[in-house]
Every structure is written in structure tokens, then in C-alpha cells.
Length: 320
Image (cartoon, rainbow, N blue to C red; front, side, top):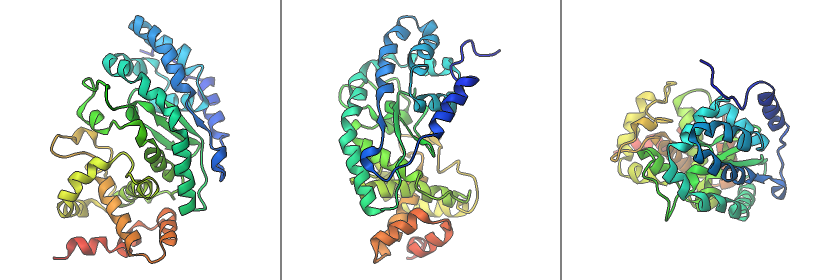
């Protein structure tokens, strides 16, 4: 049975992707577009959607997605394949959470100066960087994504803090949900993904790319993206994690290290590949005398095994 209401089908998908593809990269930080108008659109549509949840998909389709930015339409095509009902379910099943994040999500617009300051700092460290547009959307916990056309940042996961009711969220959603003030680090992490070279498909390449994005975010902002919680566990189990990682690292199966949210427990977080990759990049940077050159080498590498070898991290983990 086909979905009752599609908001990203046919010509609209083509329009969304076509418009996003035209987005340019710029070296001028002051020209980077940070679009927060989609958050305002969501809150304009939200009351009507919640008054009649049986029609919520239609409300969001007509009053949110259809009126949204090119980035929002790209987001709906990538994350929801045009099915408004899936998005509406994700919103309406968490009324206490969404009713409590209106103020914090709207506060994202006030973070623009701090985000641009982080971009300036990244440019100082790596002058070759080129910046994409950034779109902030309410995404129903479908996640942020870095695309060559721009960054699509989900406001839901950076709107937590005092007064927010997270009781309807899963354990991993609660643990990942950060504060608005985390945004400069979160966006720096995602922007790094649009600077890096593609990885080679191995687990080692994947965890280095993710850990590198956290490491660079920390260089720029003092925070390792939104993954500081991984470091608490990782620092206490570092050698154990390395020994578990080694048999998997040259394979192509990320299931125990990346995007493994179903493995989150109160005792052990998921996504520990981010931590292992961070530590490899940190070791590579620490051993270099020319820090600017070392950062360029990290961002431009295509040989992840050689990077690991030069970092000295593996030797450190196997030494007694």
C-alpha cells in the first residue's frame, strides 16, 4: 500500500536536490549561509499537527516541508524518502519532549556568531578549507548529515538542557542529546566531513574519518563534537578497546563500532569507533613538529593504514 500523502515525490524531489546542488562553497566565512528559518516553520506548523494527529502528516507536508528551504527538502528526500507519515509519527509520539524544546531550538539562531567564530578558527588552522551552507531543521531524530551540497543539522539533538523533558527518548537518544552551546563543535565536526577525502571502505578508514572530525572539532572549539561521553568510557578501557578493534580494522563491517546505536547500554556506549579514531588522530598530531602540516595531512590523507603506522598509536597500545 502506498503512503497516503507524499511530500517529496516526483518533481519536488528533483527541485530539492537540484536547488541544493547549486549551493556553492566559499572561503569567505562571512558569506556562509546559516539557515534557521525551517525551525520557525516547524513551530508554526506544530500546534495544528498536534490538534489532530491523524492529519499531522498532511499538516507537516503542507505547512513545513512544502514551505521549507532547499536544505529541508533535501533532508526529507534523504531521510524519509518522501513519506510524511514517518516524520509525523516521530514527532507526535514524543509530545512532552517537543513541547519542552521550543525555546531551546529557537535559541539556535543565537549561536550564529559562535559558529562563524569556529569557522574562522578552522580556517586559521587549515587555510584550504571551503565552507558549505548550513541548514538547521527539526528532523524527528533522523539525524544530521553532511552532504557535498551542504550540512543538514538536526535541531532535535542539540536542544536539550534544563527544563527539557527527555523521558520519551530512548537511552541512546538521551545520551546523544546535547545543548545548543554544543553546536559550534557539532557543526565543525560535520564541516570536516566535507573537507576530508573519501575513505577506502575499510573499518579503519571509517573510524579515522569520524575520529578526525571529533579531533578537529576539539582543536577548534575545545569540545570533541558531541561525543565527549565516549571519552569517559574510552579512557577507562583504551587498551581493551584496541585489542577488540584490531581483528576488525581491515574489514568492511562497522556494526560493532559505528552507527551501532542498538548496542548502547548504561554500561557501554555505542559508536566507540569515534573514540579509537580520535586517539589515532590525536597521536598523529602529537608526534608532529609542524602542527599545521600535520593537520593538513590528516584532512587530506587517502592512506589510512599509513596514517595509523605513522601515528605510533598501535605500537603504544601493544607495548608493555
